[in-house]
Length: 194
Image (cartoon, rainbow, N blue to C red; front, top):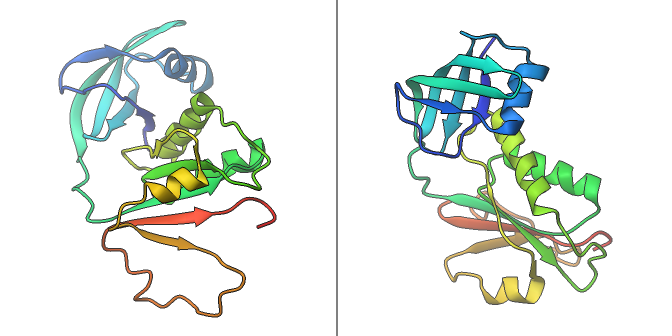
């Protein structure tokens, strides 16, 4: 069985120790029922380290970062952003999870003229993308930007940005050349009901 992966946003220095967060402590102690001496992998955008549980109590877990097993991903020449009009809670949570698993680097929640949902619990959204990052063997969870309007989103697009969206009235089909990822690409998804 491979080691449990836990996202550790702070800097990791080999052969040092650190306390786990309250949520990770609960997970290690009560869900996974690990013991002192168990190995877990701690990761962040700098890489991934095999770590050992060196202290374990009900409300406190300390790990020692042993050795790096994965180095920081080289800077991608391309990145994919998902700009999505808000939808109801459960579908939105699935979208956040699946977008993370697919490697989206940024998620931009949008309110458009026909958007029925106007809020997103950013704390919950960040928790979902971190868990999806842990599960999908990636190093960096996607950034979730603040909610913006469709008009503001369109006004702030970078000229080098390529944007894709579905238009039911369009007769043209995408070609391989159209979807060749060479720089920043944004996929825009409109509200429910188009």
